[in-house]
Amino acid sequence: MTPLPFANALHQAASQVEKVMDAMLPVLQGPEARLFEAMRYASLNGGKRLRPFLTLCSAALFDVREACAVRAAAAVEFVHCYSLAHDDLPCMDDDDLRRGRPSTHRQFDEAAAVLAGDALQSLAFEILCDAATHSDPYVRCELVRGLSVAAGAHGMAGGQMFDLASENERLTIGAITRLQQLKTGALIGFSCEAGAILGQASQQSRQALHAYAHDFGLAFQITDDLLDIEGSTKELGKSAGKDVAAGKSTIVALLGPERARAQAKILSEQAINHLDLFDEKADPLRQAACFAIDRRA
Amino acid sequence: MTPLPFANALHQAASQVEKVMDAMLPVLQGPEARLFEAMRYASLNGGKRLRPFLTLCSAALFDVREACAVRAAAAVEFVHCYSLAHDDLPCMDDDDLRRGRPSTHRQFDEAAAVLAGDALQSLAFEILCDAATHSDPYVRCELVRGLSVAAGAHGMAGGQMFDLASENERLTIGAITRLQQLKTGALIGFSCEAGAILGQASQQSRQALHAYAHDFGLAFQITDDLLDIEGSTKELGKSAGKDVAAGKSTIVALLGPERARAQAKILSEQAINHLDLFDEKADPLRQAACFAIDRRA
Image (cartoon, rainbow over all chains, first blue to last red; front, side):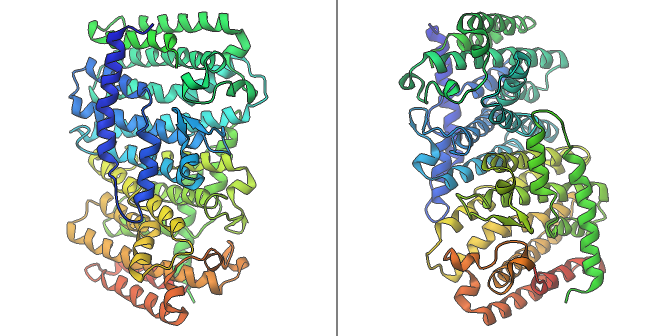
């Protein structure tokens, strides 16, 4: 079970970030209204908000002002939400359900889901380059760079393409790990890195957070794949059993659930070990690494 | 007819920008290869490259280093190309033909067209925030801000949504003008603005270029709509007669070809007048305003 204080901290961070996200997506009248509605639907729909949580926690390590950290966190989450809206499209993973509700193209239409995703991506960069995110433009450029690389062809978009191309192919463990590193790892990595960038942290701290994020991301993904075969659609709020149906190679399919679970545990412990140079301020990140493998959804 | 020196200048700028775009999209091996292929297909396919031309010309007004200007120009063109790949999708304008070749989703598939567009957008921001684009990070942030606003919900993506929502609706001239300003005007505006940002130009110069881009964009769009009804698919390299078939409101549909053509001419002249504070360095921009209405494709 997730300890209550951690669940509370996660929930509190989610509320904080959602408030900022909400304010950035005004409810409009007129011809632009529908795009903003679709952007709101795709992003203000109560996810776990784990990526923004990682950004807030890593920023807290370096005493970054919360008002700044929460903006970077919102940018990360907007990119994550845009990717979900696109990944759910019929031409991609073709999923009708997301976070317990119809996915964006089911609620609106495919064009709205594509455009909402496109505009959420633009919005993320608009947020990061704004002086309200950090007073030093060099820091803002570093944020833009980090997010653009994590989201782009050498990151999330590349990973999704790799994933689609690998359906019904039997990948090696190495290939699956690389796929996951691109598809989900890169953005999780940036979620942690963003705090260090905002805090103008030392190279050593950045490397530690980078290593943490790497192992965290893989543990998180293995758990996702376990939940896909073991969880119910109701618990998950998204369609269960999709990976098997799509013939996707996963660590779980390759190693079996038992060994995959053990592997996730090792990765979670490794992630925590990477945080040794930080004091108790890093406890929320340590708890997040436990949550990554203990969660039920 | 377009005067030969202008055609040469446009062609030369296109070559220059394409060289940089090409270098940014390496031909890869392995699982990411297909995404890069789709990104190359969507962007290295010989358009007029008018937006990058505007960036290079506006940058030249302020003696910006060409190596910097051409990077900003490439970023603008990547965003334009991403929007074409998405707009051509079956769920949007459903167009099989682009620049005389199958559109990206016809050559690859829909998923590849969506992801190539997504990754091209990320790449544009990655380019702008890089120190190679400008040594001053404040300038780079301004570029990121300008492009994100032009591409996003209050710009290009908003305009495309507006356009789709208006099919078979009879819009007023005011509404059509606003639609075009969002859909194509915002990015054309940034194309010119980028040069002024790079050149750290005076407010007066920026306003002049902004006004130029506004009138240029509308003249360009009216001409596009005229070509759509008068040009052939072969000349255009994209399907002709699409607007009428889709029941789209255009200035041409509302005013008729004659009055629309006269309106485009007035706008082109107005655009040129806005450049009065610049010397002969602005001649290529003046010629571009003539080209906008004289072109055959």
